[in-house]
Length: 175
Image 1 (cartoon, rainbow, N blue to C red):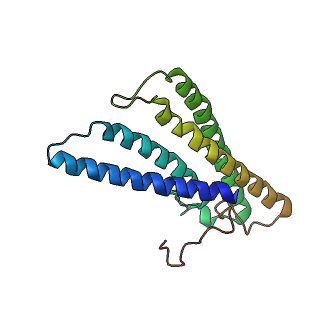
Image 2: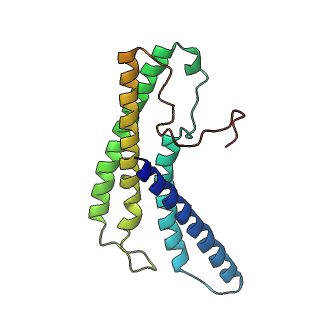
Image 3: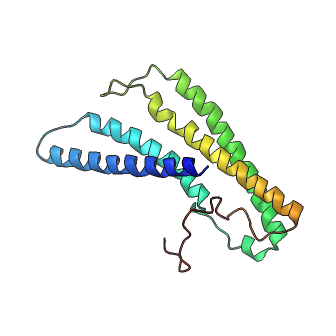
């Protein structure tokens, strides 16, 4: 699992850097009157992959936006039960995206980018791949929630980081 996390991190960093560089160069060239038409299609491709792979990284590290004003006031077993229900809903949603996203990729494999000789399925496949990665993360969280009930130990709730080697946020909240 550590290898997958490292690959995801590398993938997101490289693609985000390429995206920023590509958009910057295209903007500078456009300022000089040189159009780079394919840059928008390539930026769209990179952005889709960065978003969906980054979503799994954020989920693993509990960096998604959430409201816990009410839930933190509840007893730990109730918090764990709510976390389990939330994880089951997210699992169902990710499963739906994987299924229908894969169907969409298959149906649109012949559609090409406007300016690139590549299938648009490269963009639409980011959704199912990213949600499949999130699916595995959520499965691990569900097992953790169930394990909490069986051990009657709720010190590790759903929002605990799954990878012990992942860096923790500062106590002040800054990352």
